[in-house]
Image 1: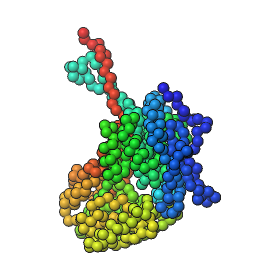
Image 2 (image 1 turned 180 degrees about the horizontal axis):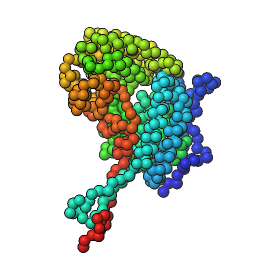
Image 3 (image 1 turned 180 degrees about the vertical axis):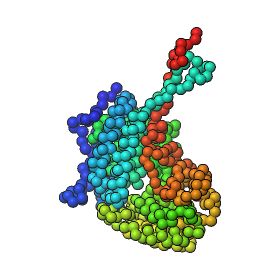
Image 4 (image 1 turned 45 degrees about the vertical axis):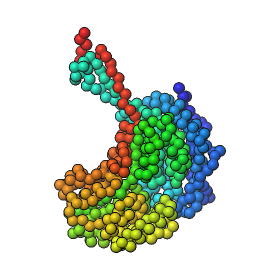
Length: 511
């Protein structure tokens, strides 16, 4: 058995993984160091990879990159630690998760600044993400306390007479969490929080664009008392992720990213439990009976939060033709009022995208749509990695802005005449993550819920709405499995059954 290095109070010499520069302090321009955490120690003797902030245009953080021997050490350590973490009581795990949630609130502004620097995400959105981190840890704690099993009705059948059968959910042992850049704090909290709640040790492979915030989230848990045996963090790119995903020591993988990368993970993983959240091309339908003003304001706000870099961000807006012109005008007005600029400023609504290449792609797509007859009612330009929010009206149905996942600061508006036809058009996408519907017609609402090929429908809201305690995931190229702690824990555990022969709940067994 591995002797836990950590515990509720942690070791006396446990180091902090990052040092955060203050906005006004002398060290504001300092680079945040985010070493990999392997086998209970921070990896400092290694090559380092720098992250250049897309808005501040300078190196803001750097992560240490493990080599193959480091990866091997991490896998061996995880396998050796699994039994010790499994034997922690659910109450002990829940207490740590609850404390981590409290620390996320206490350090909200400090950690939000890291998100701003590394990703150009506006301060208001970054603070909101940290609030969600706190919620997600609290939800994971609640699910840890609920973890149990089931008494089966074995004696409901003659062959089961005299047998008592019970189950419990056993942890898979080692979970690999591969996280994306767009919401690196909260999606890490989901994966790591649920894995620990289920009794696993976790290897985190964060995105190269967000090493410091990933370390900061792990640090919350360590400072809350998580044993070092419960988590490791390995920075790096595809080569690190590939080496980890094919490793036999790993029992389950949770991956969030592109469909192409997700397919590669699935191929390399082999017979492992997989949760793949792979993106979307979200549609929102606006019907003539809806509150058009409210729908336009909602789509403007949710279409460009985080510069549209969300798998459920509003992209395709189908509007009933009778109100399409009025809706487009109101949407354009609302989008034009969004404040674009310095993400460190409190009033900023739209900061930068992840890098210049992503921003250039969005502008190219908008120009392509314009060249084939679409009307760009606002936006369509960029300043470095910052894209001015773009509204593209009536593009060709074959345009990239309609058919492919934009994952950027644009929305398209397309008119429709028949409700059943527009539902079929929504389903023509290869993706099927989430959709929105603005209508008060209960028949249309239930028709859409039944017929739309998506994992979730938001009524009188856009596609871009999520509750962290509700199941979240899609179908088709949007992936497999469901995120949110309760449903993720199903994939992080397996059912173990015990049959007690000769023991009956219904009286003595007849000989």
